[in-house]
Image 1 (cartoon, rainbow, N blue to C red):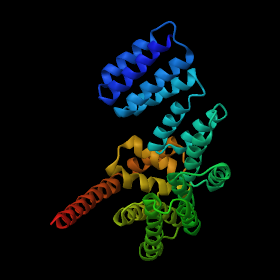
Image 2 (cartoon, rainbow, N blue to C red):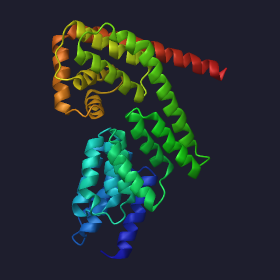
Image 3 (cartoon, rainbow, N blue to C red):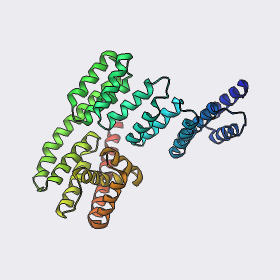
Image 4 (cartoon, rainbow, N blue to C red):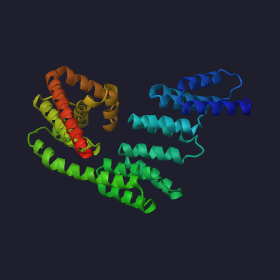
Length: 335
């Protein structure tokens, strides 16, 4: 295709997307795809732009499909790869993002951004060995940006190694001394550490006195630590443990502590997120197969329906109460 024609399409599409005329932009891109003289590289770029367009309109499912097509026609399309990976990260599907990035890494001419995203994904799932290897490799060759330092440090937070996490942030502050991103991260990690210590002392340890099953004891600790790291409210953690205690009284059987903790977090989260997103997210947090988690959730719903209904009702009341408190505090702040 002639360069002038390609230039026209590119400028026109970007103008329409900036003007939020997404339907016209989509029509133009799809008409472009009908041309017989379009190369595989150009076709990849068009699918990439369609992916961007669908992302901007909130259609992540179709956006991922277009990014996948973009990579099919050009495995070196790093923009499509990074954008695809970013959606998977937004969806908390870190293991899927890791698989995607590893599959296409060898084809990328400039690997730093792909490695950075891959390192962040490893950090998000607490695989600090891989995260450290990747980020230290990047640091030997060039600098990390502020957010990458935060992601790197977060990998240690997931492993409850707050000392190492803070060391990384302090190291980053020597490069970016005025960074609000880094200062906020340091404060956030400190808050998580202090909050976890307080909740374990005042909520978890007293709760454990009522549990006489090793699997449930371990699950309660996993649940509490995980929810602290992920920033749940105190009352949500208390309710999660309360559900675990109810299942313990009923002698509900689970194959392992991780699955039990995941089920309790699932029901605690369900009030504020849709079912499929919650399943994907919690399964990722606990590195559990989504179908395995769903079977366990279905078992609890079927066998302990009254407990779940009462739990959900009480949790919703808590949410309404907490939201009212926040609204009142904001009104007082405005005054």
